[in-house]
Length: 214
Ligand code: BG6
Ligand code: MG
Image (cartoon, rainbow, N blue to C red; front, side, top):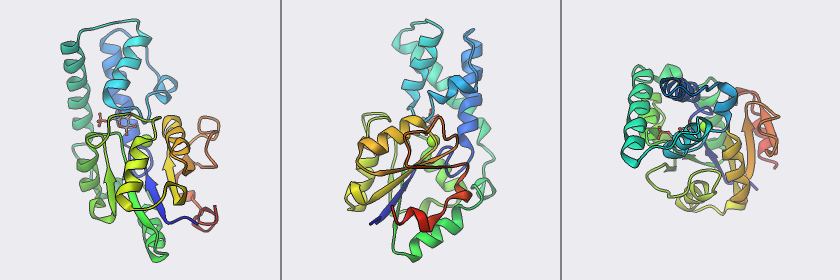
């Protein structure tokens, strides 16, 4: 019986996954590294340093720590510009009614996001106070696909992992949910997210009655 739903943020509740892609692509191109949406699938859900290292590896480049820091700052400055005007209108359609329906059934809600910008985005979307727990990059050491962030969210909720359902748009995120011993729901491409129990094209398409029987 599901007692809690743990949501990824970027790409699940709002379209920030696309802004992360744009900012990483611009950085990769500035380094002379080809980078397209298919390459980006590998980065989804992965933290900032892990993402940078995947791009550098693709370009067979190695840089010192100071340069890594500078490149991450460059990407984040670009990303922050892209989300500067974000508002409640950027919340994906279907999210509010889903939250209401889950709360009516006594289901707890949490966020598990690898992003250091998660608080900012949740505030801008007007949903920061909707969650019983928030686990973000500041809380964990290991990046998805490690289950740590989902386990932290469950611990903060006081719900056993087996009674949690995780919702993710990233292959690394789905692996993290499975490794945490939770039920994984994918949002996006069924082929990319083949490890998920069920995959929906977007969050609005999610069928809550089916989910709660999982
Ligand atoms: C994840 C995104 O949620 O957060 C990744 O899927 C992103 O694309 C990662 O790189 C880290 O985000 P930030 O905001 O800390 O750079
Ligand atoms: Mg995501």
